[in-house]
Figure 1 (tube, rainbow, N blue to C red):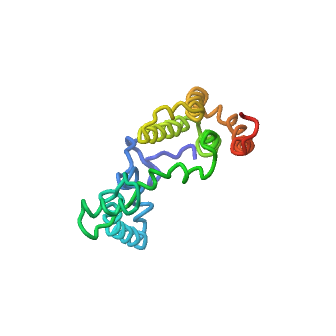
Figure 2 (cartoon, one colour; figure 1 turned 180 degrees about the vertical axis):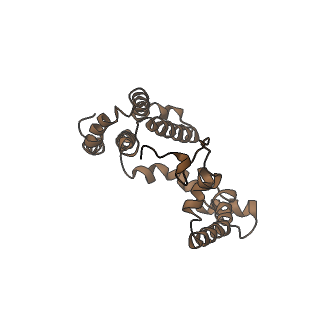
Figure 3 (spheres, rainbow, N blue to C red; figure 1 turned 135 degrees about the vertical axis):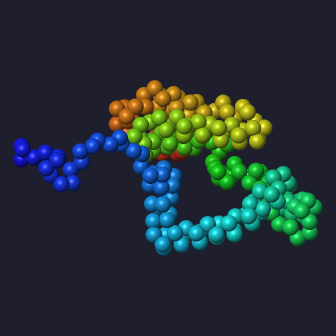
Length: 213
């Protein structure tokens, strides 16, 4: 075969072409849509029917849940009166005032108010424990903790009590985000698995009320 050359063998390229980008329809968003939602006539039909169903249902849900909702009321009767006073007789909408008033009980049940930092801390540490299982590096933990802190800030502002931000879970989230940012490389990831393994014990003692005063 040492004497074989491109000009003596059929179908052997003699010119080197510059690599080209893949077609737009096979990569990126369009490629994902084609592969996952329109890969066959059946998938295409189901996708179109699903979009039509969403377009039919979503306006009514948004109208009920957002545009005709009430956030401030002392009773369900007052909610209904406010909705009908604004949007007319027979109008209906969501009464989120009960959620705003009872969110603490819905989240914690009868857990003592003074000790609610325990389940909050257990939730923050749950994110830390799950992160190395889901991601190649720990850097996404920084974004997760940022989202948790932002949500906590928004709820604190809504309640009118910014002092709620000065609680142990906030400092735990800040510390976890800082540690993940500095020591969150792929090489360090196996060490985080140690915390994932011992987290169930930590969560149990936090929620049960042991060890930490």
